[in-house]
Length: 96
Image (cartoon, rainbow, N blue to C red; front, side, top):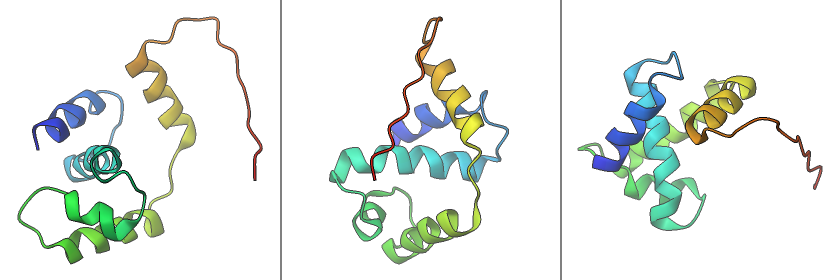
């Protein structure tokens, strides 16, 4: 859980989200590195805490069903966290 806390603390200044959503996002970003998949059922098994795996699974479903991502905000966070120097080159991949 230490990595989740560190990532949540790093994201906090950049996202005006409440603590539970920040904690979820941090856990979600770390989970694929642990299980090497994007399958919700497998991701739910590596979320920390006392909640059951089914609860984590439902939380993943609720987040992606109900929350609309602000992609501009996410892009700003990535640039700020990675300290990418200007000038930038934008590349758009339209692979389907």
